[in-house]
Image 1 (cartoon, rainbow, N blue to C red):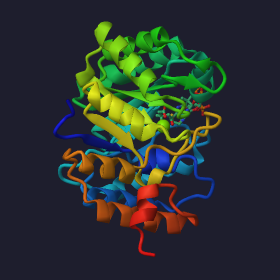
Image 2: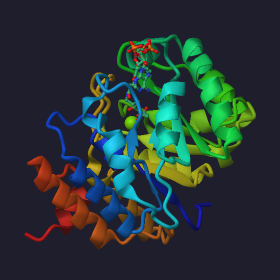
Image 3: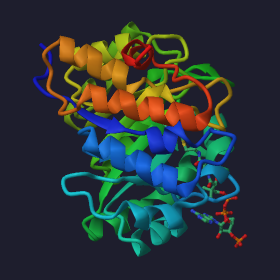
Image 4: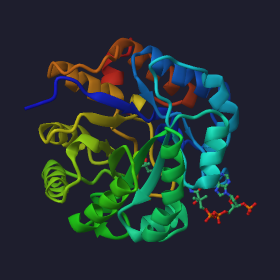
Length: 299
Ligand code: HMG
Ligand code: MG
């Protein structure tokens, strides 16, 4: 059966904006986060403490994070690749972080300048220190389905890195379809294999990009397998600068529309959310790619 409630992990301010060519002013980013929280999203991934030249759009993390303030009941996770990133984030009081690994060697190299195992070694002290300080840790796992350089990714490779991230102490693992090539049968096969290999579905989340229009179908397949945390990006913004052919994430509005229809609770006010994405689309100078945002926009 389907869950009664789904937690949406909103990634718009991070995954959504990281690929935007024109710099979004820090104040606009802060307002974006505040509007998303006001629309009822309880997890809003705010920014990344990565090397500023690797993701210039998020180079203002130090300026942005303090503007977010304390939003009661709202988690504001930030991406942290290494100890340097953890120090920057915790100096500002971050209580929720995400490391980000890869199932494939090519993407690990391009995104983190490391092999898969070197990146796991880089995360180990980050996760250890964060957990010791009571900080919540999410582990992303990219290229769980297809990789633009390596093609289809064997399930066994995904399982190996997922188990390792779980053993290292991640509270949650987000399975990334970075380039959006997954289809529902592949999602079922991966979730079944992870279950057989002892990675509990209760720690898993799914992270779909909508390149081939499969993100909602994939989400439904995941919900049927017991997933209750789903990543999405307001307005369908997004893409990874280090993954060729990655387009926007599953749009949060499209997700909420489907979940509402299924009678699944999210706590999100769809009108406020769609208005936020329309406002952001104006700031970015082009219409939102989300079908639901377009359908709900005043004509
Ligand atoms: P590197 O060049 O190997 O770094 O990059 P290094 O460890 O050799 O250090 C080189 C210099 O960078 C040093 O400075 C460090 O201090 C500095 P120097 O001594 O030369 O003056 N440095 C830093 N500065 C600020 N903040 C830091 C930091 N770390 C080192 N955190 C590194 C390695 C990991 C830093 C780099 O590869 C990087 O920043 N990568 C980030 C890439 C990224 O953010 N990609 C997008 C997010 S992943 C994604 O979108 C996928 C996801 O959505 C899921 C999905 O869809 O699949 C999550
Ligand atoms: Mg992503």
